[in-house]
Length: 622
View 1 (cartoon, helix red, strand yellow):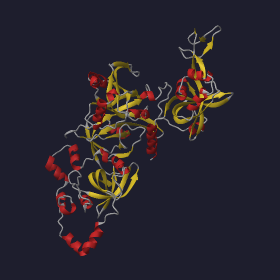
View 2: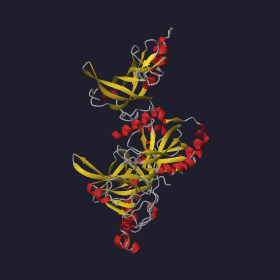
View 3: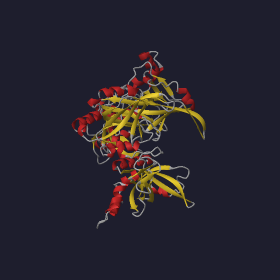
View 4: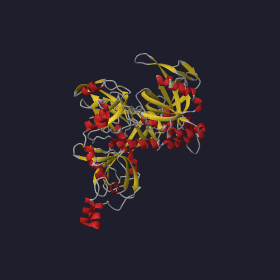
């Protein structure tokens, strides 16, 4: 590998009208100049010492730039790239999808023109150029055919000689170079992609301020396994709805791209595609088709909490711990009985999660897993929905894909860990880290996150119905003289009264017991960087805050001694950080409406998850 730029490489590439990066490229080394970020990507100028051209790194190369592997004024070898047109200008640019670092930062920008002028003089340089063959490969390092060979025949003549009367899709494949999905961006001009329809939505009608219409979308996957969602509205939706068939392969061109709305996207891609009535969609029926490679973007089990009840689907890999028998569940919408099977998976975080397989996955793959459960197979599942049943739960959907014992580095690493130490390790359910929440609209600790100032500065919150948020804060004060608990029935937990003779009477159970239990009903002051508020907390949540039961705290209060253990326990609970799930309602007291904030769930702070949440917020703002 050379340690300098390839002279004339850029000019040779740009002057070749049919340049193909996979066959015409040899050693192309360029210098990175003017490297600067644009969103989650980086642009630069590629310099070969004589010519500069605008270029862009794909998002997959951003980590190498952030880590300093690729630097401004450094040298890189272009391994895979495409030459694209800037639609608004008559210029071209390189989109680099893969490269290798050749040399670190140089002192300055390379200028071979200036160097040669100094060494050879202008006249000697002209004589050299006059005697240099057009296809001399020693100077440029690139093999090009003479230019006249590319213009001697028209495209239609070449097609006729090679294929005769080929099908339209085949003609499209021969006259336009197929672009991989990873190379597409909103700034490209014309492109053609070859993709398989891996999911097709239903036609939906909508009505908004701009009128009525219809819309549907498809999920497309190319040969490399890259996915993108394409959406069609109105005339385009009616035109292409019947044409797109699930599982078939198509050539698509004349579409547009924009940044994907993270709230609604269903595939892992920074962009989404829109097709209009002028877009071209042709089935690749007479060509050899392909089976897209399934690409996964695995989420560790310990990080699932932040995806609960979100629209974003996740991919998971885990070791099978247990498989349940098939059960039948009655669907509410049509009362149809559908099969379901639960499997428990674990990974290196030593956390477990239950995945519900539905329909054919329950009876097919599920039965296969049941037969081999004693061997602890590794499975990878694509497109899972994260719910809040028992804290965190996963469910397959129609587009979910299950791969048993995949041949991937992640699977081998996970299997090696399980065989060496995982099978003996103590596992805990991921749902135990998040309080099971009631059926009252409250979700996970990582949805609807707000600061306390959002609640205290909006006194009308919860006027019509309760609203739910999650927040992070410190317990700053607990009143020691408040009524902190009530006497409760041991059976139904309702309040009891002391009986006339002895014992306690429960109205709910209509019976008398000799003993009762104490249950928390207390308020605590919570503070964060923006303000403070009083939270009402009940038994389970208060136990997590105080660290002991109400009966135990009452015992400490009644004990004497030089050290007040009751005060010490309350002091230990203050200035501890928690994540709260809360509801905000309006209560009327003496004719005045007041805000009431009630704790619905409380959990210790997971600093790794909090850091990821902050990074998500930063990426949304960028």
